[in-house]
Image (cartoon, rainbow, N blue to C red; front, side, top):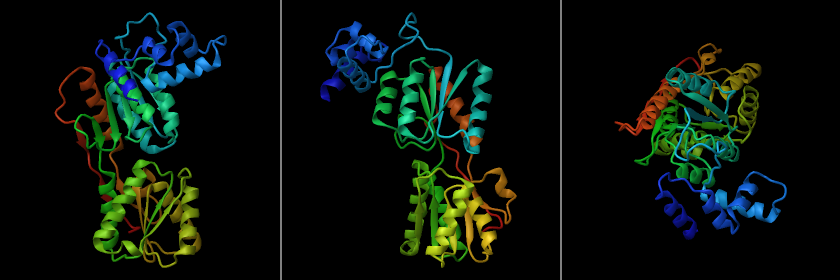
Length: 346
């Protein structure tokens, strides 16, 4: 591993900072011609050599350039934006804001949806970097080691969205997911609720962080031992929210306050509560997350954490423009905060 890192450092000193085909060939123990053919999936190349070349390329973070006649240092006017879901209102609003900032300035926006899969995101990063984008907007920080190597090796300016970085040289725009979870816990406790539950699906890094903040506040109040946590890896949906609420009541009928990791689950639980004749908030208090437009119109109206989806997209895009232009940034981490919208559900 030390030899690979030293090879990357030597290559970076040569100007572009990008690993070359020669480095890949050397690490794989083949000629540059063989390495090139292996990466292009030419069928006459020995499968064993193909495997060696692709392993070497992955280890070095090498990205082939399909525009072979373009200078290695050249970049397009494309900005890559990677989000975990396009069916989610949260990311649609963010993408619209990004488009409003970048499109008038002549940038082409390449959108990738990785479906909450780090492996899918890695493939998208690998493919999109081959187009030599001038910048990238990424969701969060949780990704594969190979993705991290690719991003570091190419040196493309990037801004992370929805979370805040604790590293000085990393640019991010978002808010503290943990603090938001803690605010919900304190709100439920202020309502006199003591038998609390956290209900979560999808289980991406931000959902986990909300739960950690929620539990931290409960521990500070001395009631964590009475709390219940239901977490499933299934994609979040209204239907799943109803199912999880039903299971929660069956196993823990004394629960009197629930924090749902997003509004979709909370909406489904509200519908199920109405079917079962469970009064909200008299019997159980509900709090959601993201404050989707429908949450102000449910029966009862849903208390939820309002997140700055559009603002995140706008600020992230403007910050990226500064990085692309080589300007100094006043702040590397921009905390846009959040707001607890207290309504009828609790």
